[in-house]
Length: 609
Image (tube, rainbow, N blue to C red; front, side, top):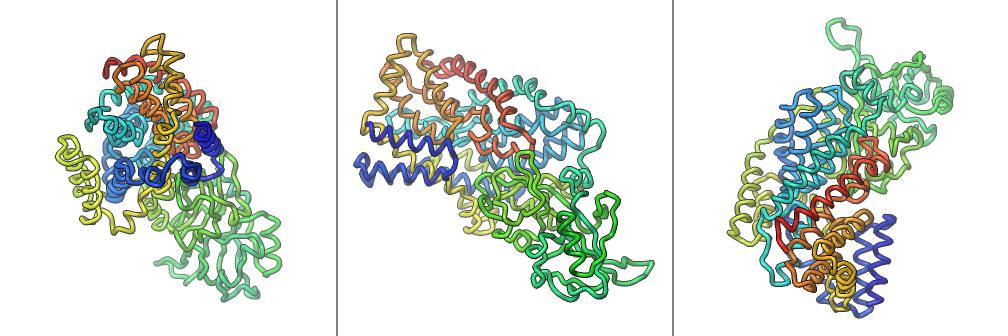
C-alpha cells in the first residue's frame, strides 16, 4: 500500500510540474507497479485493451473526419452569423454552439474550429475577443450531453459495467449537460465582462477590427523592418538565399523580394516573391528585411546595399500579393519543443516566421533557435494563398490572425454530407444499442477513411492524440493497483469515516471537491481514473447508489476552470486571448465553486441515492 501511494504521489508531482510529458510519467508509474510486484504483466497491459481506450482512438478519427471536411466549421459559422453585431446575443450563441459541437467531438478540436470564427466575428463587430475566448474554452467542457463528450464519462461508465451495474445510455449525461450549460451561461454572462479592460473597450470603439498594419504595429515591426535596395556592385547578386546564409551571418531575415520586370503602364511591372531558400537575389531587387538596426546596417555596409528611409512607418504597407497573419501553436502539436530551424518552417509551410509572442512578451530577434511552446503566437508572412492553406493544419496550429475577408470564407467540402451521415448513424447505433458502443465508434472511424472524409489511414493515425491514449491506457491499471493493495478502501473509508455521519450529501461534496481540486494540477482523465474506484467503494460502504457519486467524479473532472493548464482548451485560448493566470482565477474559480455547489444539489435529484 505504501509503495502504491508513493508511486501515485511521485507521478502526481511530475504531472503537476509539467516538465516531463504526461504519457511518459504514466508509463513509468505503470512499470514501477510491475517491478514492485503490485501488478502482474497481464494486469499492467489490460488498460491498453480497455474499451475506453479503443473508443477514444476511434473518436479521434471520427472527429478528424468532421473537421477535415469542414462540417464543424460550416455549422458553427452559419449559426454564429445570426448573432450579427449584438454583443450579448453573440455571447450566448458562442456558448450554445460550442457546447453542442463539444457533445460529439473532442473539446480541443471544437475550440480549434471555433476560435478563428469567433475572433473574426468579434473584431468585425467592434467587440473585444477576450470576452468570448475563455467562455468558449469553458463551454467546450460544459457540453457533456453524451457518453462520448469527455473521457471521464467513458471512464465511469466502464467502471459501472465492470462492477456489475447497468451501463449508462448515450444521453444519460444530457440532464447534467443542460444544468451545467445553463449555470455557465448565466455566471459567465457577468463574469466574462471582467476580462475586458478599459483599453480593450476603447480600442474596439475606435476600429473596425484588427487591420494588417495594426497587427504589424502590435509586434512593433516598424522598429525592425527595413527596405533595402540591391546595388550593382553587391557580392550578393545571382546567389540564392541558401548559399548566402544571411540569417546565420548577419542575424537578418529576408521575408520578401520585389523585382522590376518592365515599365509598361498597362500591366504590372513588378513581381513579388516570398523569400525562400531557393530565392535568387538580382541587381535592382528590393529586399524586405527584419532585424535590429545594428545588424541591418552591418549587412548593408558589408554588401554594398542601399537602406531606404521609412520615416518610422511600417515599410510593408503593400499587401497585394503577400501579407502577415498570426497563428497559435496547438496543445500536443508536433511542433512543441522544436525550434524554427528544426521545423524548417519555410520549407514545410511556405511562410516566414517574423516573431514569437509568449505570455504577452514579444521576441523578434534570434527566433530561429527558440523552442516553441503550447499556446505560443507566431507572426508569419507569406502569400495569401499559403497563409490560407494553414487553415488545414489544425492538428498543429490555428490560424486566427489573417484579417482579409478571403480568410473568413468557409467552403463546404463535397465530403461534408458524408461525414454528417456517418456521425448521425454512429449516434443512432449507440442510442438504440444496435451494436456495442465501441463497435459503433470503430465502424464510424473506418467509414471516415473508406468514404474519403480522411485521405488515408496515415491521416487517420496522425489525427490520434497518442499522448492521451497512452496516458489513459497506462493510468487505468492504477485502479487495479488500488484494489490489490487496499488503497481504494483506505481513501474511501477515510471519506466515509469523516463525512459519512453527515449523510450522503456530505460524502458527495467531499468526493466532488477532492476530484475538482486534483484536476487543477493533473489531467482530468487521470483524475477520473484515480477517483472512480474510490467513489464506487465509498458508495458501496454507505449502501447507497453509486451513480450520483460517479457522476460527481466525471463532472468535477471535466468542470475545472480555475487553471489554464487543467484542460487543453483552457491552455489553447490563453495566448489568443492574452489572458494571465489571474484571469482564470477571477473568472474560472468562482464558476468552478458555484458549479460544484449546484451539482452537489442537483445530482441526487437526477440520480437518487
